[in-house]
Length: 181
Image 1 (tube, rainbow, N blue to C red):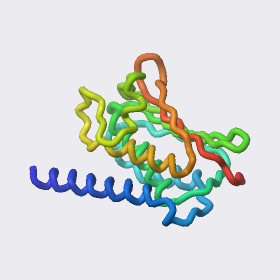
Image 2: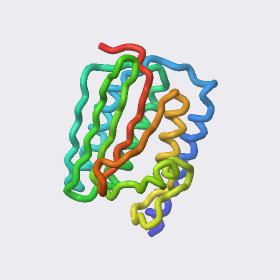
Image 3: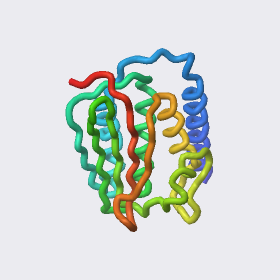
């Protein structure tokens, strides 16, 4: 259908623009960003999509945490991780988001109970245009590459592991905190 192809193209162009923006870090001015507020906002934005697939969204968010960065790009990072997790979580599944502070580090975790990512593919899914073979989920292979680019510009680290031995994926994003309330 032509409207589906136009929508796919629009999403692809937007993703390429986000990558270009993320690569232009020196042109941006960092600010204090409340990661807690961004996660709460994103969860609200994706609630309807999750409910449509009967996915239970669970959140474990403690006190407000500030990081230095670029709010629009951090919002995009969180949105991409939520969008990806919801796409790959089967109907009736679950997705848990948590924020935990350890000294000057904050770990943000997105854990789903989808098909999981094989260990040998985990770093590759962060590459531009890479898609795990056998996936029937629509996408361009740019969403997680954008996550990686934005994480890099914020000196954040990404780890990917399994929720259990056979199913599910957990994305851990480690940020340096500047302030907690």
